[in-house]
Amino acid sequence: MKVKLSFIFLMIQKLQMKNRTWNNYFIELTNHVSTRSTCDRKHVGCVIVRENNILATGYNGSLTKDDHCDEAGHLIIDNHCIRTVHAERNAVFQAAKNGVSLKDSTAYVNVEPCWECFKSLISSGVINIYYESDYPNSNNVYIKEYLTKNKNITFTKIGD
Image 1: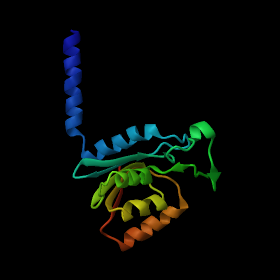
Image 2: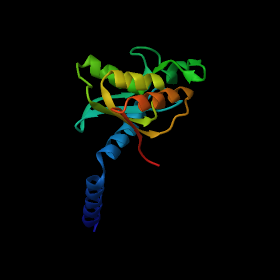
Image 3: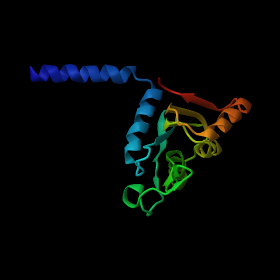
């Protein structure tokens, strides 16, 4: 009986995987990547892909070889922890360090990017941005303004 139940469970998993869209798959990966975050105020993950191949990942964390919020505490300015590098920028930096072009790529983020991260993604060649949950940030009005002028960039919330 144990073998039959595990076989049924495996078949259900395969069906779920088969019906999962690429967008949902990559958004799920952002949540997994975010578990590496070293700032407990917000766990954010970013996955950048092209043609469904992963080019880079990033999570919010401190500069290389610097103290982490979990160890040294937060460095708060204007209600934001500035000790960390945002997930989107870490993904862009990872690609740059490894010589990977992000031209015409797609970024998935589990939390809506801030204006600075949006600019970094667009400037590095990302043309599609998908995010899972909203992040209240007054500067994000600039994203909407930019998108009205630049129709070649997509910025889409997934979920709800």
